[in-house]
Image (cartoon, rainbow, N blue to C red; front, side):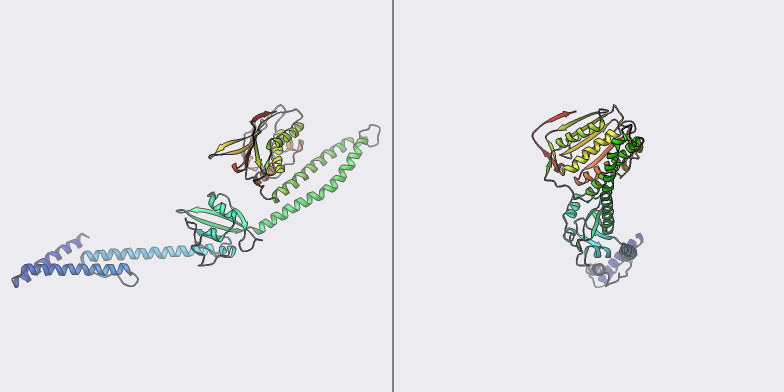
Length: 445
């Protein structure tokens, strides 16, 4: 570059000398110098014109050739253009591979701009959502997927989970939709057809419900015969007296099966029900009072059971499901708390994120739970202590029922526990389900 500037300086000096000498021949040295400078300026203006013409239409014109500084400039621009073309070819190759790979995906993929407009989608998205190319490019995604669940999901800003909604093409099909943020405000919308999964899940629920319902009839018959025979077997002079113990064990096992079938039917109903309505207030203090009476009867005085209840606080939802939550949490605490232990129920509200949220807590001083087992507690038939649960008549479905009932109320279950230190089960309900009445907090128990 330094050499090019030296060439330009020599060119300027040579131009001035030639102009001065040429003008001196006609006794007009200054005029000759001015003409020479004008010619030099014209040369630079020509180079600027050639550069401007190329920059406006680089596909039509090639970069000009020149010497000196202009040659260096044109050469640098040529190198930049060559690198840009190479980079463009590489990006085009990467984009082509990306589009080819996403086109082969069975799931729909849609690139959504920061403003919510569709920037690109693959062929699977076309078949799942009925998108058209290129007509739908640039259209807001909310205008093409018109469903309240999707609208609230997009506006909510929390994309950790997916949302399921009927297909806009055929409502008989169910789609799972999830947004994945990336880049500078962009989002990738993944669409998956889960209709078959939903159908199999529905078949499983129907099978469990039908099988449980059909088992009730033979169990009722067996229970009737056993209840008829037990009084006779308990008489010492009766021929059935030797069957007193086996009949008692049969009665206990029948009771377990009846409880198991009842819980299976309840769980099947919960899985098939829709979310609980928000406009029907339920008197939670009454539900808690009934649940405490049942649990105290189950405990038979072996535990200290207390409750602190906000009498003014009600909850919008389904009474039967909320009753299942309270009864199962208290029953679970009784079964896993040794005699002499303490069980405490709290029903109130707490401020979080600027609003008041209803909270139900059940604490116990029981055997506690290992940290590895806590995520599995809401699984069907999972037991922390199998022997203790079966001996107390547990079915292993209580916390699974609690989980589904809470999901119907958009609530979250938090579990804190440690071996030998007891457990705390906290149900956090959303603020919009809170209903207050006149009253104050009182202590029950």
